Length: 294
Image (tube, rainbow, N blue to C red; front, side, top):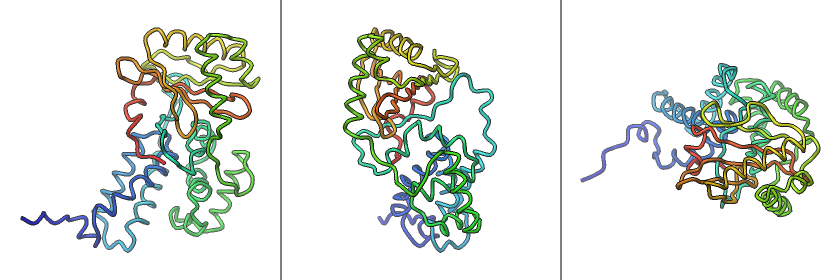
């Protein structure tokens, strides 16, 4: 028997296999826009559904990028985090074993930085700077003039404190070495050793979302951060296995209890540890190892 015809493929004059090949890139755009795998999946799926009911579409790929981006902008405009309990950290994703030139634009530090931008600024900046779309192409996606897009990108750069057209670089071998030494110090509980590897204004963001035990405020400074991290590692090591991994394109740690991810720790590194992001909100750990994001 011949397979049943695919209505969407016939409608578009192509195959679903070809279209599904666009999902990882669409997810990569949507996740950076929203900082949430679940919300990104919803936006991408909605874009595919709208494609199915659209009229004549000359470029399915272009339609999907435009629709996904606009859906993300709409979500950002209506999203409210006023009721979120404690610090909000972007949902972590496992990137171990992936060779992505866009790795640094995945870091939780970078995604939190994007929170400074308006939805339009965020979309224009990401499409132009991270995904290499030309200004005219970004204008088509956002339905804005090229001049307006240039203004949006320029304003975003100023707000983020970035200059030039340099692309993001992957985490270096030196950074991985620093991460291993830092984790060793945290495991040992040696406060002086932990402090010695952190910047003076280091911050620790602990996201429990009111569903798991976590600090209710961002912890600042070497002394308080070192004590907090030593306590977290001491408590977790009583019941959990510790595994080094890669989180959002950078060094990180998994705490696993009974085969289930309990905590994901991500490190933001320069010459020293600049910030630590701890995710314990169980809702944000469901898709940890399965998200198709580069």
